[in-house]
Amino acid sequence: MTVTAICKQADITRATFYLHYVDIYAVLDEVLTEALEISENEVAPETMLAMVLQAGQKADSTAFIKENYAMLPICQRVADHGQYQALFADEDLGPYILQYIFSHQKDSVVPLFQKQFHLDERLAENLYLFLVSGAFAINQHHKWKKDDDWFAIQAMLLRFIGYGSRSFEKET
Image 1 (tube, rainbow, N blue to C red):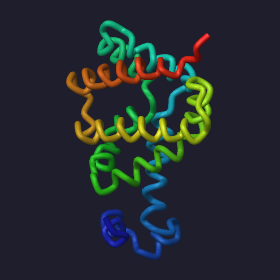
Image 2 (image 1 turned 30 degrees about the vertical axis):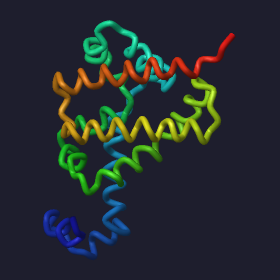
Image 3 (image 1 turned 45 degrees about the horizontal axis):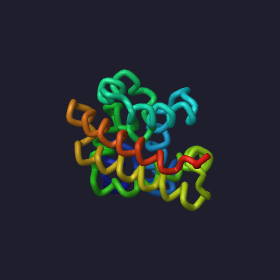
Image 4 (image 1 turned 180 degrees about the vertical axis):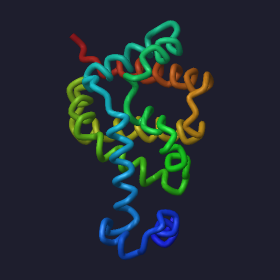
């Protein structure tokens, strides 16, 4: 995608484009910000983490995830809106989008991981990077389609995460 192509598609001049944006990444950032805002929900991060950990311990995790889909982390829901499908399906933009999601969510997730898992900031940030990168990769691999196969994979991964998180519990 180029500025010229955007201008042609939008039927505007390059001067008009540069009046509003510094470069093509400024447009991408604005679209990604909009996608994240649309995908936000009113669920507190602590509640979301508790749901994720609880899902991993359910006998029928797939049904639990379907029933509580809105509580999944934003990195799982961000591409649900049709107008963003092509953007998230673009493998060339994947690393940029992943970094954008990571950097815009880490300030709320890292402190939560520090508290929940008794980690220092560096370890909590790296754990979050690992999880968001993996979730993003699985979603890209499945072309962001949320079919029965995707839900089964999510259930398996949440079991893995849930049981793995137990290793952080402090011994009493």
